[in-house]
Length: 61
Image (tube, rainbow, N blue to C red; front, side, top):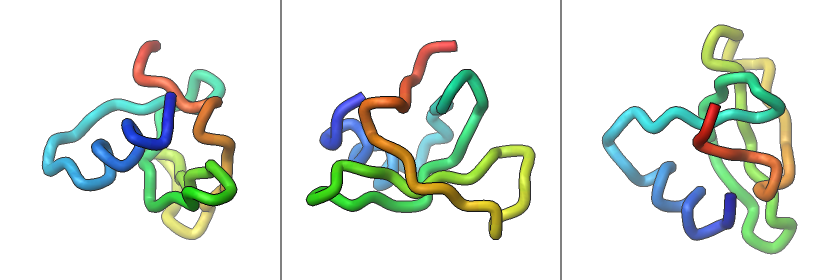
């Protein structure tokens, strides 16, 4: 995935499925300079956030 798509997903009112390492995640935010996104598991707790490279996120499962 690229940073522009991450921005679109974050600002979208739609529920867009995103995956990190085959696991469904929510994108909480992003850092353009580091090209990372802060995510948490859809089935997990909000406090279990992780910063991951944007290029490792995808919409296909």
